[in-house]
Amino acid sequence: MIDDESVFRSTLRVLLKKRGWRVLEADGGERGLEILQDQHPDVVICDLLMPKGNGYQMIRSIREQRGRLSKTRVIITTSSPYEADRVTALAEGADAYLMKPVVASELLVLLDQWTPPDASDSTETDAPDRPESSTMRVTFWGVRGSVPTPGPDTVRYGGNTSCVEIRVNGEIIVLDAGTGIRPLGAALSTEFNGKPTHVTLLLTHTHWDHIQGFPFFKPAYNPKNTLSVLGYEGARKGLEATLSNQMESPFFPISLPELPGNITIKELKGMSFTIGSVQVTTAYANHPGVCVGYRLTTRHGSVVYMPDNELFMRLKAQQNQGDGEKTSDTQSFAKHQDQKLLDFIRDADVLILDSQYDEAEYKQRVGWGHSCMNDSVALAVAAGVRKFYMFHHDPEHSDARITEFVSQGRKLAGKLGNRTSVDAAAEGCTIELPLPSDAEAS
Ligand SMILES: [Zn+2]
Ligand SMILES: [Zn+2]
Image 1 (tube, helix red, strand yellow):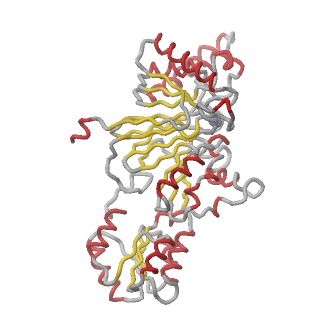
Image 2 (image 1 turned 30 degrees about the vertical axis):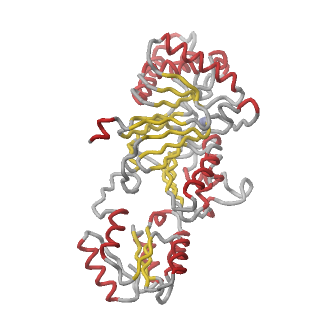
Image 3 (image 1 turned 90 degrees about the vertical axis):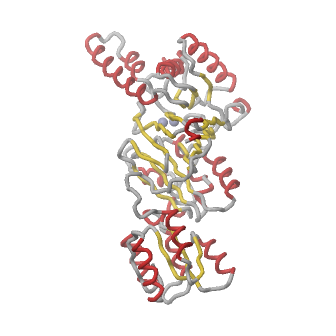
């Protein structure tokens, strides 16, 4: 609480402490900033006009800081009767603007919405729980592997690299930041039209085709927005270093810290966490470097996204042909690895999985970290997946070729006698998972 009027502070202090908040106080901007640096509060309640640093300056310095202050909420309190001051404060990035004398109930409603004092810290993100949405919506924005491939041969499935959007229970979750994230960013900017937006970006790994669109993600340029980037370490360097390296001056005109959006980058350690009410589990993929797949679960169902993966059994079988003794050990290890993957995707409603090659191509590309389409289909069927989507299409594959993959895949799934539906991910395509009717009624 930053305010030069001690009476105002003591009234609020009593009110907030009763509600379980820990209150830190400053009588001016300078001291306020020191407290901010040291304590990283969840909420700042700040007077607009006071000595040694006014409210605008406070908002600006909070919004300029990435890292732990990026989620700090700012409430400006004021006795200024001018509409222009309210407009400016909100434009600068204040979350709320309250007239003095502050009505206690208004303030408490805001605070309860944001960070209840008894909020558990077991979740990775401290986003508030939002109401359950009627559907979980999955949209493909980029489906290509390796490198973008625009042109007349890739119109149907699309030429942008990996990016999938999940909308559920008020969360905007983006899986990977290949070039598909650029049109997604443009669509979000149009939809929210300048209103503050929070996006969670989950990265599977830091190969180009999964991060290269990030510098072109429009919401990262709006200072009112917050963006949490979560992923595992980049190969050799930390995640943040890897992401900023691709924006260094020889490669890009704006550096990562210069992006005006409030970006936090967090390296994940554990294999399960939550984003609001979405349960997320992860599994390591068999792919060069550190690469994972994500499984997102709500009451609507489960979506698994594993864009880059080579199935172990096939890899080892090809590599060890004719190598007697070693073969049986490696085979059983490989079987165990694939079994773990099978458990990870079991009964998923939607599985988005690497299916880059056909049989003939795979034989030429063993050990490249990508799968043969037939193996992916068989795995999906064995795991009882409901809807399977081939993903990470090879840059050499035209629309016609991918359509052939789909018909081959469907034949195979039919032979394997399971009801898994088979399709190829296509840019712009959306899948809706509705809330089950019993869940809706409860
Ligand atoms: Zn890839
Ligand atoms: Zn990769």
